[in-house]
Amino acid sequence: MLGEFQEQVSQLLIRHRSVLDVLSKTQESTARINRALTKAITECGCVQITAKKQPYDTSKSLEENREHLDTHFSGHLCEHCRDVLTEELGKNLFYLTALCNIAEIKFADVLKSEGERLNTLGVFNLS
Image 1: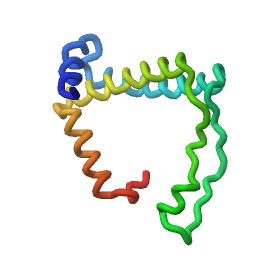
Image 2 (image 1 turned 120 degrees about the horizontal axis):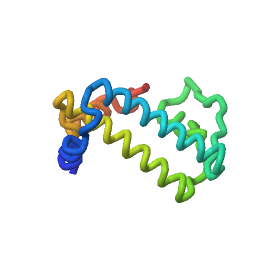
Image 3 (image 1 turned 45 degrees about the vertical axis):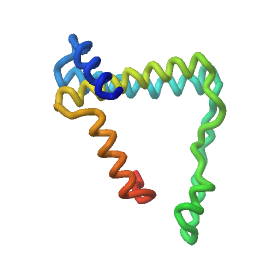
């Protein structure tokens, strides 16, 4: 499935084939994801952000602390906001895949490599 998607991106990316175009379109699509989620919060109100300092007890294990950490995100996206965000995420994946094509990297290999790295590092993959 990923290989088919990558081939489809290769066939459809005509106008913005330059790596500079793809990099700027990737950045633009990331901004549009941020905007879509912001509008879901500030205009629609279907979801909310309630942020505060994350509690972290250094005397407890990472797993014990995980139970008390919050995403600061509450509510459920309405159908419209979910559709908009899904569309923007799809465009972002399109341009990330286009970048893979330019660099001659298989998108599936990126996911596989990252999965292996996550498995190796486990909870120590703190970013």
